Length: 609
Image 1 (cartoon, rainbow, N blue to C red):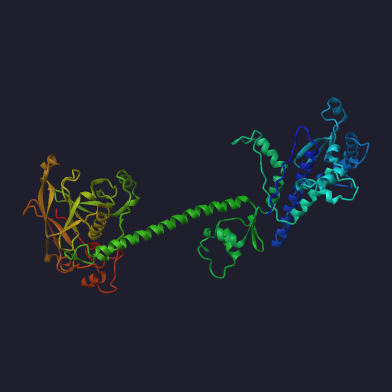
Image 2 (image 1 turned 135 degrees about the horizontal axis):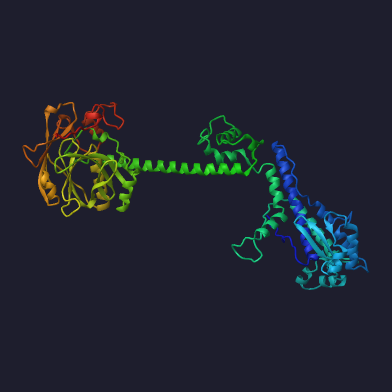
């Protein structure tokens, strides 16, 4: 790989031989660049069977011939001719060039009136380059072109004992034994340009066009007129016009389909068998509602006419990628959640330590958030306020208040606390940090009631809480797991059919005046009631104020009592067998055995008013 770095086009107040050579070089390379671009376009279109549309552009071959041609003679030819004439001068060269080239469309000399007015335009001529008009001074051109280095000096330099000095005179070997006049500077420059173009033709060149944003060499300064002038004289407009007149974008079918296949569900993520690659590309364009006039099918490539079509596809792809990323993230989170709840469910098999009956509760699929609490903006703000974000459990249950009335509440467990909130609005009624939960007390029956024992030093919730949920095993397992991992202690579990708990004092109207005045001991008793029916899985909370004003009683049917299996160990299959669940028995949508209690639930519950 070779890198060719060339001077930019030069236009100064005084332009001489050096500027003429540099601008001639740029003119020559521009001609090669345009010719190569058009040739490459034509060859690719012909190979792909696409009709070529002629494009109008400025062909600067006329300017190149004006400078370098020998027949008819150009500027450099007249300069070389005058350089060998003994009596020649800059004026004779100027007059000869003006006489013979004045009719050329890209050559001009000033009027005699202008010469009479000022000497600045004396012996000057203008060449109309592709980049703009440049006025050159003929003064000193012959001297610079002759490059008069006498032959004896060249031979002396070539005979030096210093390799460095010999390297400065490479022509000494070429001209040894000859008396030929040395070639002029313009002849040498034309020969170098010819060699350069031949090398470029044999390569696969790629161009980088640089733009000078300002003349002050300052960062962040963009001079519009200066840049626009460069864009014009660098031929960028012609190049873009050539590309856009045909098809601005072309790409092999397989590359196109690989990049944009995600936009077409017919071939995403896998192309059906028997589909050709061009059919797949066509289905993408059709589904994206791209007009058939905006593209053409070649033999191996897709040609798109306007950049806007490509921009549209890229925008659609970018949006689709965001959807795919969200889908992958959702799938991964779902996998992690399922893995987490499988582990929690496995731990739940032995959570009751063989001291409590269970009626198929292990068949419930642990899902954590059953009421979509994570989508609540109100709850999100509440959790952020307490530096919490992860919801481990959320479901609707019941809280039994100090007046022995059951109230619907939402139970939410995070990594830091147990929340009791109003359903729907998620306004908090109680928040108990995990470190303030002392124990959970339960009966030995398969009911859903439990007492959440709160530490006495916690002033926000001064009493224990009597709660009910059909997902008691999941609540207990998650609380146990979180307290082990974050607090390093076990959650104490109590199993009694008569549980004593702390409650706020008093029952009645006057108690409203005594709120927060202290706590007192109360009890909640659990008993099996055969009159409730053996086939009904139900637990009822009844008011026994007539018997004991401060007590609660929960009646359970035999289905939740003596007929329910005692959970013994962690082994799911043995528990399943012990519960008498037949293999392949029909289940409800939530994974519960069908034929349960009221409304298809595992438990029924009511409060006698």
